Image (cartoon, rainbow, N blue to C red; front, side, top):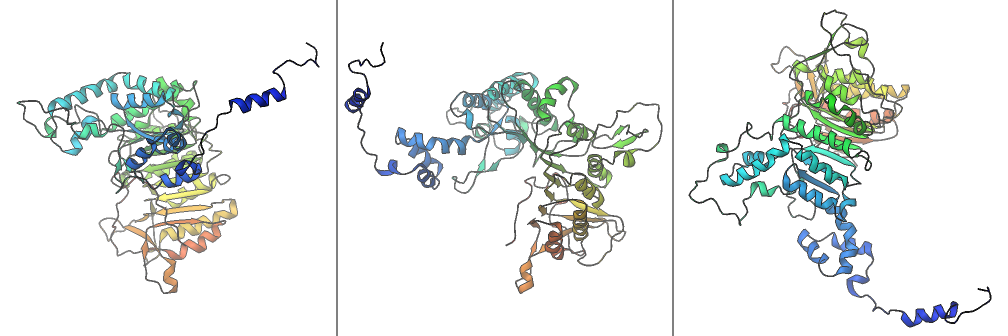
Amino acid sequence: MNAGHQVAGVGPQANHDQVVAYQVHRPTQRGILSLATETLYKISSYLTVTEYGNVRLTCRDLESRLFDDFAKEFFGARQFRITEDCLRTLTNISRSRLNVYVTELIISVANPGLEYRDSFTAVPPHLYAHKHLNHWPLVVTDRGFQLLTVALHGLPNVQAIGIRDFSFVGRYRYKGSPPWYSSMAKRFIIVPSTLPPEPEIERRTLTDYCNLENCLGGHPIYTYHLFLMILRVMGSIARVHRLPTRLEMIFKWGYMPCEYLTIPHGIQLQASHFLGKLKVLFLQFTPVTDLSFVTPPGGGISPCSTLPLMRLLSQTPSLQHLRLDFTSYDLLNADGPGQTLRWLAGETQERFSTGSSSLLVYPPLPPAPTFQHLERFDFGYGIVRPSDLLNFYLKYKSTLREISLHAASLVTQQPELKEDVSEWAKFIDQLADLEELGLQIKTINLSKLTERYYMETRDDNGWFKTYFRHPGALWGAPSQKLYIMTWTGASLKLAQRDLKPWIFVNLDDDLHYERPGRSSSPAGLVNNQWA
């Protein structure tokens, strides 16, 4: 066809005529639909869950505009249990348009048997047996692993995965902030009205049907089972999409001994892909039951109470945020936190080697990770010497910018027992001196600190709480004791000036909040920044 040849009905004028002829004139949107999407988000934030759901049911256009905000709020973080119902729900989400919005997955250690035991509510025997028998195959077979793998195959944007034994506070839309239960959780506690009690069978108490022998819920071995399941699942989906970079294991009522951080040889390769890419790691554990012995680089043998933890950390070189909670560490195993910090700081040979010989062959001490990107370190619940903390901070001075100390206890051998002279105030002085060596801490979080003294005049060997006085007292304001504090600044010398004058210890005051132990709240720091 020649370039200059014109065909009837073709050309700019013809296109314009077609647009005019077939243009659909829609009526101008009025009312709430005429508002900007950001304005709709703001209005919907004042609605309760029921009201929010009713608004989304009014029309398709409004539901479409609110869908993104709805999905991020209600499906961004999901809490599940390893049960048939929960895993089916998670699989359904992974196959829907909501799958791209799930960024955090929390797995609860509770199961039907544990809920019955804790609730102390009369339960129909047939309902308990049904739930328990459906849950048991998920534990003793690979059924739970297979269902969780299928679900995570369809969740490409999960960035964090965790194991917990408690529920969050409810969303702000819920009045009174009730607990945020796991999916299907209430089916374990409340008997559905459509399922009548068995006829001619007397309702009995929980202890008749539920105990730790027939249900692993609440026992650390079940938590260990979940931990290994997560490692296996992460190894299975590694080739499908990117792996989560955040792992959290936090407990409020239960506990997990340090030896349950051991990774079996059969899944070492699968676990290494996941652990090697972790950027955030939260671990909470109790002391080992039996003390381990290792062969340090200098030879000989040496006791080590945190060997499983060291082996786990040696596989996480990419961490940017590390939190270690040494719960229930007392004087009998008080050096566990110190051993770990010295190992991470590269002081293994000087501190661990005993120089003794033995005919037994002990495993070698794993190499300490380099942590070239570590920006924040949280230490909680453990008994520690000031030098161990300071040496660890100095080791990672090039990247470390934020530190947190929660329910930690500072121990000293020969303290100066003077009123209001706090060892933590001295610690701030020593921390500020490290600025000359290149340490650049920008944020310091302190909460529920204690001091541990060796004293012959007291039966408890000197457990005392550290408190902070509000600086408003300087201008005549009422004196107020605070136990939580956050400092942010550009220099540790400024931290010394701002923190040290307000840190005190009362040697005659009793310890009101809990000593380091698994009964303490694991929620971490609650920042209370001063104006």
